[in-house]
Structures are given as structure tokens and as C-alpha cells.
Image (cartoon, rainbow, N blue to C red; front, side, top):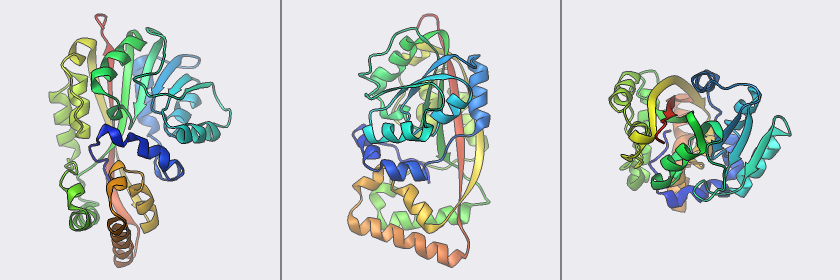
Length: 288
């Protein structure tokens, strides 16, 4: 399932379900991490910033490439699990704070990464502060998963969305549209003069700011489509880590979980869904 466009007040719910988040949220494709590192021109020993590390889904990939990571994470439970997961491997400095309030040295980092987190930051702060923290020419690399329109999984995804519309219509009404790869590429291409507009569009978030056009240039993107298979319990576990789940009533939660069980039993196989991992990078402009 795709991430629902959030209210930024909902970001704290992830810390409340940190263990489920750690079990259910996927890591990010090596292909995209490698591409971001190549664009940024970084490698072993370079210091980078990670905004919203969660339980370390991306952090582990960064330290595996020899990068020194300063990881900002407001959730204490999430950050504790990230520390446990890394198990002392690599050089990571954790900063337990909201990015808006984190005291970080300006003009220091060759790259700033954020995976499925940048939309939780106040956009009147996020683009400007990210530019200020990067060295001139430094790279901002944003990664997230989105739902994908894919004929291989369309029947399964339609069944899930139909159930959602019946049981939680207020959530389904705001569910992001699924596009195919061609439409995603075209939409990003149309918005590549402003990284904030590109990122806002692909994730269905209210993030676009005109000043980002001045702060960042050389916007690039890449995608990796993925077909995932879930048991009913796995799908329910993933649903519990989506911010809108916290706003559902107990009856709605039980209804969706029962629907997952029935769809799984009817299919007689794992429930399939298509997502696409999207990478958008931009280079800090000299004027930034």
C-alpha cells in the first residue's frame, strides 16, 4: 500500500509503533543508494546527514558504504531500535530531535539523505535548512516508496482498495492515485526545475515551495519497480505503520484485518502489490 498524504501532526505515531515499524518497513534498493552516492561523489569516510532515520532502514545501507552518518530522528523508540540494529557497525552519530530544531553545523555535509521522512518536516523550514547544511554543490537525496499501477498486481490491489473504501471511506477518499512508470517519469520530468514540486507531486504531499528553485538545481530521478508478496498478517503489520491507521476506530481496524484474512484465503496465495522506489536528487546551488 502507498503512504497516505499526512498531517504533520501524525508523525509521532511511528514512535508509538516502533517495533512494528522495524518488522514491517522495507529497506531501500541498493541500486538507488549507489546512484545517489555516485551523483554526490561520496564514498568511504565521507560525512553525510540522514533526516529521519527511523529504525535504520536506510542508515545500514549508508554505513555499509563506509559513510560516516549523522542521523536525526525525533522518535526515541525508533532511534533506540536503529542503534540496536546497527550493532556498533559503522560510524553513526544519532541526534534525537526534530529536524527543524536540531543544532547542526552549516555547510558541512557532502550529502543529505532522507527516506520516507522529508514530508514530515515543515516545508517552510526543510528546503532552506537542508540547503544551509550542505556544502556548496552538495547533494540532497530523497527516497520513498509509492504505489504503482501494474497489471501484474492490479486485481489484488483493487480488492484491497475496495475493502478500504467500504470500511474506511474517509481514508480511501484521500488515498494517492497509482500511476505507471511512464506517468511517474513524465510527471517528474515536468517538475525537474524545482525539486520541491517534484517531490510534492510524486508523494502527494503539500511540500512545494518556490524558494527551492533557487536553493537547488540539477534535479535527477530514478525508479525501481518492485512486486511484493504478503501474507494477511504481514499486510496488516504494514498497515499498522501507516499514519492514517492511528485515526481508525477499533471496528475499522478489525474490519480491515478481517478483510486481509478473507482475501488471502480466497486467493490461496500471498497477496501481491506493486510499489516503486523513487529517488530524487538535487544539487545545492551556490546561491543557496
